[in-house]
Image (cartoon, rainbow, N blue to C red; front, side, top):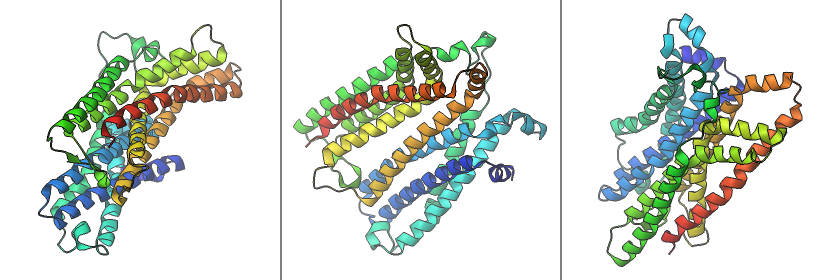
Length: 386
């Protein structure tokens, strides 16, 4: 009931983000139900049904990441005093965020079930198993997975953590204005190494699979097949890009502040360094998604193969979730520096300088990450080229 009242009194932008969470949950739930329907319509081909369900993990993870990002950016994170007065204590904010996330995702799951039942009645029997009764327990289990896991992830990300006893007061990571927030993240060299290892595994595994009778795994949407080791290398490459994201964004801030920076470059570089832990991971995820999309376009964009509707839906969901997570993280970073921005305005800093610093930050990050993403996409597509 409390989460419903908070949702009713939220700003339009907050409601829009929650509707986006509900929409991505609906799309993910539909994909899961489609995999279940395919398994019902093809009882003699369990491997293909299992592969379809396994590929649903990618949009599932993207939807969870978006749900967590939206939970962290909502104003309910500043309701500590009111929730404490209501008797909810330190865990009030995580519990409220979990309930709100579960409510949004549950709404999307209901929509997914209604759409699936409508589409299932008008398709061929083999498509979604329309000639067989829908297993209620299996369908409800799949639909409940997104709300439950999204609520748990949101609560875990917002749950208050005890500060280390030896840490000084000035090193509190919750204060965006402290010097510790500018410390370079340690993930850049590890992420770069993981990306290089993943690319090397792809090339080596592809050469081995061409010379031996290695079992291949089907790719979604009729895109052919690939060796399991090649897909594992791709997963390592994507994980390395995500891990290197904060360090890469921090390096962009350091690059801006090099060699006697003026007020514009110093302000943009310092802010980018402070925001790197918050926006770095979403940027890394977006780079990994973009690299995968570019590799797919290079492999199949000019061929005779066409993406199936479910594969197109999954690709759209992953892209929307990645973009939404980056924009949500940027809004959260903007909210955390409101006090610093107000202080700068009181000191007489013109608003045009603040806008120019924001544009410069975006431009530098794009100039750095776009060539790297294109290069990784080219290297990742080469082992799968036919």
